[in-house]
Image 1 (tube, rainbow, N blue to C red):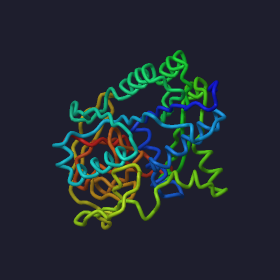
Image 2: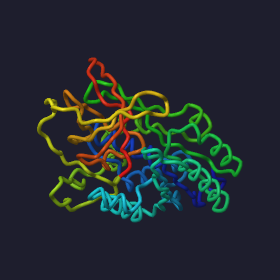
Image 3: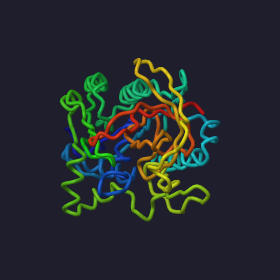
Length: 337
């Protein structure tokens, strides 16, 4: 706790971009809220939460640094993916308007698979270096990864208190599979201020708390896009890439005729198949796979954002089973473009 309650509490915020994307997708596609997380609303929540934990005035709690880390397609690949370049720039504008510094590493293609490497290490190094030089009173990590435990310990040696915003949730996808996200208990035990955001949101929404209500993008401000049309106007400080249009609604579940997929070897020795995306819906899609289209959920994607996908994209995948014993696609990877 600060010795002088009239002094400014300096806050540094660090986003694990992939994790934040996963959380925002959950609220947009699977939660009853059906809306993405607002960057501006989240920052206001952080300031007030820090003030409560530090027993000080929220006006004296200010975010002096905010940083977002994630892998991203290069300009050439994004341009080939239609409006992906636009949505990347759109999200950059949102982050920039909220004073968030972006840190991107290129998503590279290795042996035909797109992979994101080095982001967590970069986040940890930047967070430690900035805390060392700027002497943050509180460092806020938006992550669930236990790999950040050494970072938390190092920040503690500097005298910075660490807050972790984490979400634990589970839900059934459209094929009845249970999808579970849990925060590392080792991480929660190391930090000064663990904040269970799923509990905060669910409890305070019932009370119509405006601070929690503002955590979500207003419905009229969401971006909607359907191929062949233009994005609608009006964008809030939300997670970008708001690609929510229904694509190619017809023909799902009908026989496709001749096989149109290949088989490749994977590193774990398990057979993987290669085919193309037949249609995309809100949070799920179908892959060409005889005798019927093969369902996949956005949570089954590896190293890709669901909003980056397009119809006829080539993907590698494994065939799994849902709770009803039906074939579905799992471990779906977008192949190099």
